[in-house]
Length: 204
Image 1 (spheres, rainbow, N blue to C red):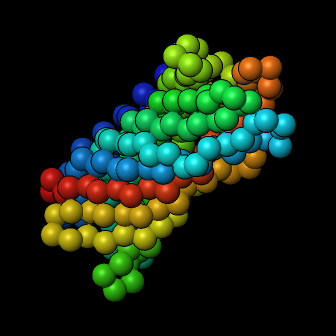
Image 2 (image 1 turned 90 degrees about the horizontal axis):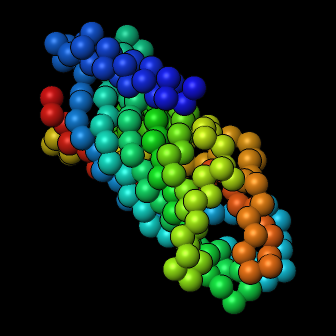
C-alpha cells in the first residue's frame, strides 16, 4: 500500500509539472533543509528522559503553482528526510535515527515581500534504528509506516532562491510501540515536532 501511494504521489507531481510546464505560473527546483527535531515521550518514566533537540537534513524537489485568480499558490514537495534523537535510559544513551519520505503540500500567499503558508505533510517511514553502546537495532516495526502532520511558516524569495522557516507538528497524538532498553520500557512520539529551515533554487 505504501509503495502504491508513493508512486501515485510521484506521478501526480510529475503530471502537474508536465501539464503546466509551459506556463509562467509554475516554479520548479531542488530543495535542501536543515531540521531541528524534538522527540517526546508518551509519559514520564523513571530514569528515562528525552534529550535536547538534534539536527537532521532533507533534500528533494519542490513545485510551486500560482493561482492568479485568487492570488494564492500551491507548493507540493517531495523530500527525503534524515532525523535523529537521543533518549537517556538509566545510565545508557539511546540514539534513534529515522529516514522518511516527506510530502508537504503548502498553500500560501504573499504579504509584501513575505510568503505565509501552511498545509498538511504526509510522511512515509523507510527505516528506524536504535543505537545503544554501538549495538544497532532495527525498530521500524515499532512505528506506523505512514503518518500525517502539518507545516506552517513564512518565507521569502530572493532572486532565484526560495527560503522558508517552518514549524512541523503532528495531527493528533500517536506513539510507537514500547521500546525496552536497560530494563526501562518507554514509548516515543510517532511523529516528532520539527523546526525546518529550507532553501530552494528556481530552475524556472
